[in-house]
Image (cartoon, rainbow, N blue to C red):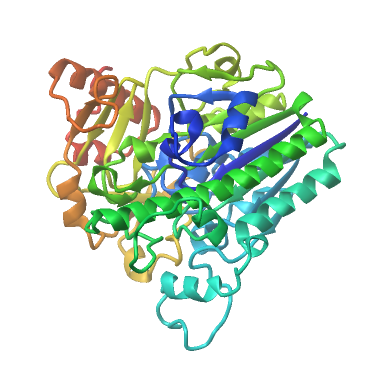
Length: 488
C-alpha cells in the first residue's frame, strides 16, 4: 500500500472548476474530480499554516490552547507513527515556515525530507544592502528572491513537484511508503510567469498588485480584479503541476494501490466581504470551507461527491487507517474510508478557528461564530515549546509563566501557562469579532447574519460540547461568555 498527499496553501475552493468556477483555467483539478471523491463539506480546524499542519500530524484541534508553534513533545505525529510501523515517509516542500522556529519540529518526523527554497520572504538569496539585517522585511526579501526565479522551472513550486516526481520514478515499484508534497502556492505573493498571467487579461494600467496586506480592502475595483487575476494565474500553474502528478499516477499504474489526497490548509479572501487574506477577520467560508479530493483504491469510487461534514483533523486517522494502523486515543479525527465509500456521516458538528479569535462551529448547514465578550481576555498559551512563528518567546514573555496541570492529551505532562501577548491590532480584532450566525442553505455567501434563538442555542450546545471534548482551558469559556457545563 502507498499514499500520496498533495497540499496547496491558501487554495480558495471557489476558484476551482469542480466547485463551480467557470473562468479559472484548471482542467487538471476537473480531471482529478473525475478520478476521485469530491468533498462538498470539508472545513478547516486550527488556523493558519502551522496550526493546520499540527492537525495533519496529530488529528486533533489545537487552536484553543496554542497559537502558531512547533509540534510538542506529547503530540502524536502521523508520519512518525507510520515510520514506526515500517512505512517509509518522505516530505518534499517549499513551505518555508517549516524551517523557522515556529515549525522546526515537523519535518524531522519523516524518514527523509527535501527542502526547496525561495518562496515569499524566505531568507534565501543574499544581496547586502537590499534588506535590513535588523528587520525581517518579507517584501524586501521577496524582491531579492524573485530575481532568481526568472523561469517557470526555477520557481519553488516547479522544483517541489520535480522532486516529488523523482521520488515516484525511483520508488513507484516499492511498497509501504507515504509521499507528502507541499507547495506554498497559491499563497501570496501571487507570483508566476507571464504566460500564466496572459491567460487573464484586463485593462488595468497601474503597478502590478499580487500581494495584499491582511486588512480591509481599500483598493479600487480594477486593482482587486488584477489581484484576483494574479491569483487565478497561480492557481493555473498549480493545476499544471497537479497534472504532472496525475500523469505519473497513470504512467506507473499507481491508481490500483495508492491513496491520493489533494487538499489545502485554508482558503483566502480576495476582496469578498471587503477583506483581504485571513487571520484578522471572521473566518468566512472563503477561508474555512476548503476543497478536498480523495481517491481510495479500496473502494475504487470515482467521479462522486459526498456531503458529510469532514475536517482537517480527519486526515491523520485516514492515512493511518489506510495502512492498517489504529488512530491514537488522543486523535479526535475519524478515518474517512466510509465517507468515501458511501457518504457515511462521521460527526454532527465541527470546531474551527484561530487562537484568540472567533471560536466557530458548523453542522454543515449553519455556521456560528462566537466572539469574545469584553476585551478578549483572559487568554493563555499552553506549551513546552515556547516559540512564535519566527522567533523564540522573549524572557519578558516567559517571566509570568506558571506550570499548568496536564491536559487530557499531554500524556500526564504538565505544561507552561504563558499569558498571551496582546496583539497590536487587538482593538481591531475585538471590534470585528462580533458573534454571528449564518444559514448556508439560504445565504451561501454569508451576507445576511441570521437572528434565530433556537438555532443559536443548538449551535452553542455543539460549541460547548466540542470545547469540552478538546479539554479547552477554563479561560476560553470565560472570554467567550459561555457556561462550560452547558449540555452536561
